[in-house]
Image 1 (cartoon, one colour):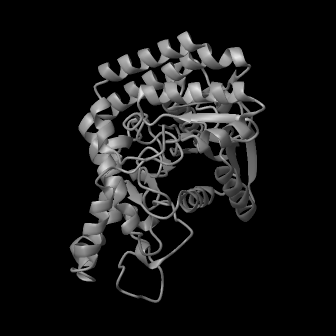
Image 2 (image 1 turned 180 degrees about the vertical axis):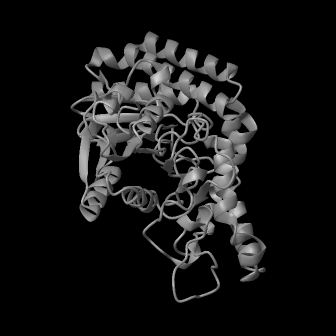
Length: 409
């Protein structure tokens, strides 16, 4: 064990020394007492300069400019920041992405709008193992609109495929709503193939990008994606509760009507007229006043991703998860730990999931010792590897800590 552990750490340090993105680790704030942070797929670390940027905002943009900042910069911020996310991470041209609300609210807005598009299409397709919010909202929308849910039940490690989707499509399908990366296993769906399958059937395709935006290159425009929603607090490092974003393909703007008709989505926001008329552009997805302060932290991360390129981020993500699988093979498989993610890096997002009956208690031990992965019921640990803020040595230390905690039990 000692020799294997030493060799694993030595190899991790060699990989860090050769990693072109390794210098960017210094851009992130220190976390005293944390030996390995392996939960960037749940909450990204703050950049080192985030605190000062927020303080400067309070001093100047809010504290000095006061209400004038709405006219000077804040009114257009949801669309400007949406375009920035689109350009850096989504492969989306301007005017189709907006930052607003929570992921749950935006999923509801788009799902409900899509559900009412064609009266003859009465079914929504969704995966049985999708994230609870996606499933719960789909159930609610189906109940409101008098529609039927069609459930996909693919292999959890492999993830959903175009063939799985094709098997349930019909002339009754209104919407297919799937996650790009499975929150449990990290399985990466074939977005272009599945989208094309759905579009050929005349239905709308909606993607949940929460576990892929900022770490998986994508081309929403080129692949014909209709709708997408994603959060900004994972790989975009926007901080706890930072607002989500929504993408609507340009051709659909004006043909879908989102259900929460607030004043910010009106064609003339200050007309205060007697009836609601939606804006013709992407602003129609807004409802209430945008959370300006919560939009600050992610801007620095977008700059960082843009500076290195999303393809370089993906390359390191693959290298990190490959190394995590290797460390699992050497250190954890002999201890009876199961690999709950695919070994094929091309079909995997940026987290690797492992399973063992003792992992609930092991996670508590790890957290107390400054090693922070993510526990998922019933017995899984996710090793979430955010490429710009995670080192190979952290991965090695984390896996070794899991083994030590198991041995101690």
